[in-house]
Length: 357
Figure 1 (cartoon, rainbow, N blue to C red):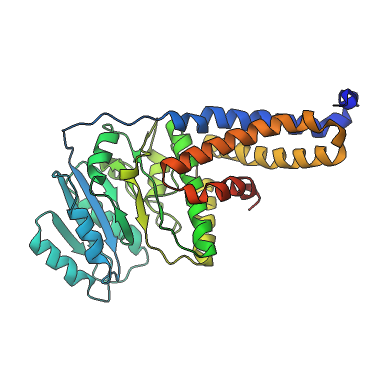
Figure 2 (figure 1 turned 135 degrees about the horizontal axis):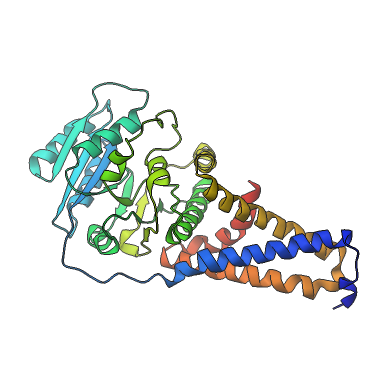
């Protein structure tokens, strides 16, 4: 190593100073937010079954409505109800739901009688009004993997008054955009979980979140949010949730969805998170912005210094390896816990490209 590295003018110190500051910020985020996720422990088992309303909003789902309803009703859990809202389906979805309601008293359903501009939010509002139990969780109609122990496990993971963030993602598919969307959703969950576990509730996904029903009505529902068509309950959660959230990393609480992912879905996912961030309170936006820019400056500073001062490569590269090593360890460990081992390496690369996108 050439110790002339330290012999420079104040102006010449600008790039190294930015780089080492970015390294410190990166280390702070990794140690304060992300590495702590790995220490989350399983909750103790309990025989007390808290009442849970499972809500399902559907539209033209006659081909798979039977599958998702049967998975929910097959739960190894007694104290729950299933609320199904039909969003003006034009096929036989509503008739199939009615047949299930006749066969099983746990199934309650209602429907929207006409097309509306804000149909998704109206359907959610109807579901929450129809729900009679305190805790509520929404599941998508394209859910294909729903473990029989799902409700039993999220019952163990939750505390009264808190929201519980569970993992959901697309099932494995060979297409490029399916893989990229899986990576994006995986990393968004890590960010949400890391921030929420430290008392900064952050939600990019409404699906598979267990929450107190009253949080919706105390915030007057979607009042003032109807035109924000890019998101639904995420808007309520980000505005009204306070304090630390419960985070479940258990395989039984993972939900997989069968989505035919195309380029537009990836673009919509990126657009959605950008718009959600814009509506966050100043403190959260600031924390997110610092993290993103620190990552950009870290990479730019690393490449710039290695290109201009290769003789000091060891001094430059050592702190970078610490940052990269921590990031690699977190992503690999979380991918293993969430059954995402096949995308952990691509997620590690993507996490450094993502701020530029």
